[in-house]
Image (cartoon, rainbow, N blue to C red; front, top):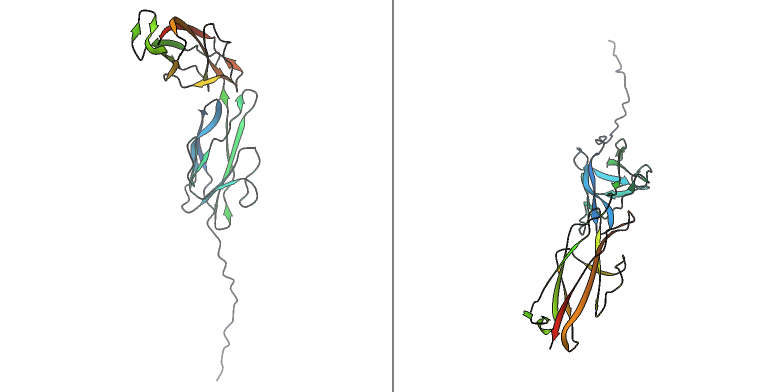
Length: 230
């Protein structure tokens, strides 16, 4: 009687994670006050992945280089961010510079290939000057606004990532506004309360838009109106 001895074979069982899909971008540029910032999103199609990104042109590496977002979709926002959002990421001004965004997806020890895109903001050719209107909240008297109160409404869009600044003075015109002058929101009212006793007391106001990132300012708009007090 003969017996056969079975051949024993050794097998190595390996486990490897799924390589996640590289991110795709849908990114643009918006304004946060006078600053140019990213908006939009980027995402991977592989469920359970995290995203790692850089905005300085370097290659993102999970755990050692870049910002990690624990989500399959990351958003660039100007509002208070959630865990999947990044707030107020600055963007270069064209043509002097370009911001390069690079990103990978990461899942269970595996990284996707690097995806990248670029963004920059183009400055407008010029800014549009604001308009200023005045009203009397306490009514119109024979010599100006009653009770010394004047409401000035400064309106306009300006253009670019512009902000609105104004100066105001009683008796004589103030200096032209600069980026450091009083801040105003376009369309909102600036209330002036005078207390000089008399009639026809003049109040002078000047306003302009500024886009400091682009080195632009609009022409200055000025007007004046009177009040009577008490």
